[in-house]
Image 1: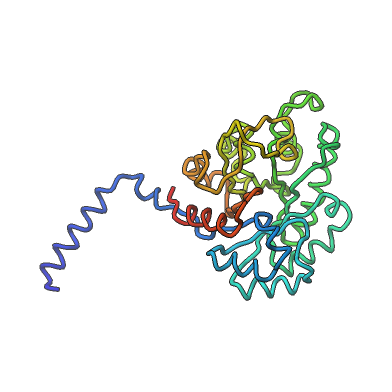
Image 2: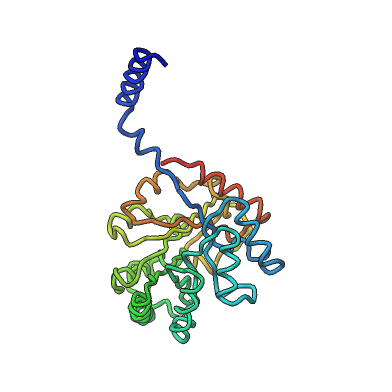
Length: 297
């Protein structure tokens, strides 16, 4: 290229870039590593654990989150080998409440082997959903969070919809708010399920603003309103009325761009797709992956 032509081309390119509106640079943000909560493909894991992990990786996912201690009969070292073989990382795993109470030290050891940076309690039993019950849960979570932090792992809690229903047992206080207030923000972070909080009619962004940096992980779950839906999610929703059905990400009504535009404020580092009710699991996770990997916000 001649020197004059090069200079002219450079000047035009610089002018075009300078003329871009300020929001253009912001809109280039994207999710670098889309993750999957493996509960979405739980049926397939039971049939072929190793093969399912391979198919998840082949779809494009870079991170996976395990659930309920389900590792297909593999040891922690074997799980790590399988992940490495497929180019996957598992930054997080869901751990049942009773395990946190009774088997926490050995759980932390196994988490280190697998490569978990976060361990998450996904559920508090219905009988314990009282002010006193959540006080006991908060005390347990603080204790578990202190031990896990010493081991280089962050403790978190994952919500459903029932935490956002006013309860007479708590004097009208939301259970989610009780947990946020009663736990040490350094020891206990939150993995916000963006679908279930939206089903409850609450705004994730308002929580990001009130508790900035408290939400290092999110579950990316979509849904549609459907008054004729026969699906039952009573366990997840509690007294929150939900006439609808879960959907692949991008096929529902959640405004992902609006929420993810505030990712930095919330402190989000990991995004895990989850569809509790996937009818065709491998097709469903591809639809969600394709949508999120192409999303700009």
